Length: 154
Image 1 (spheres, rainbow, N blue to C red):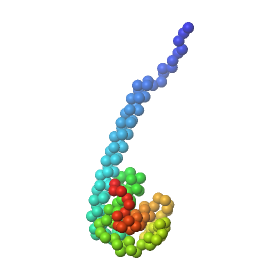
Image 2: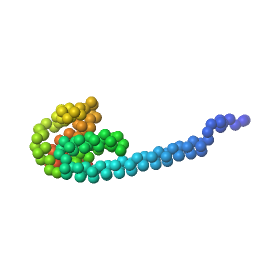
Image 3: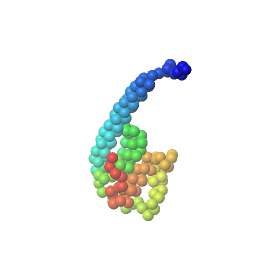
Image 4: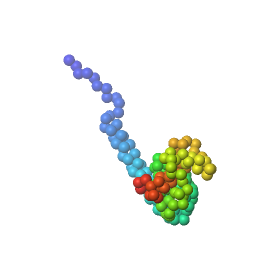
């Protein structure tokens, strides 16, 4: 009885696993590099916002955060999710009691954020993904929680 023939004309298992290993290592190095760039960027931005918050009014903080977001050097999801964190650092620079007293905090919906964005000339195209609305929501949260905000530091 003869043994069955085995097809051996394709790439060897050793070659396939070697190429996959190289790709995994390269992607790992790139991901780590991107992480380091993002972490350094946020550390720099938080320090800058801590300083700017000492002299900017609340609208100035929003302007600074929107400008930062437009030029953010980190990954886009980190930039989008970082808006409340960055704004909280700016707001913490001084007492915002007058801003908090001027807000209507009786409604938990905070629909006023979209009108505020429209009034300032930065309307929301998509209400679920709107940097301006995220900034105003952060102010709402900051004021609702005795000028502490609820976001954990980055």
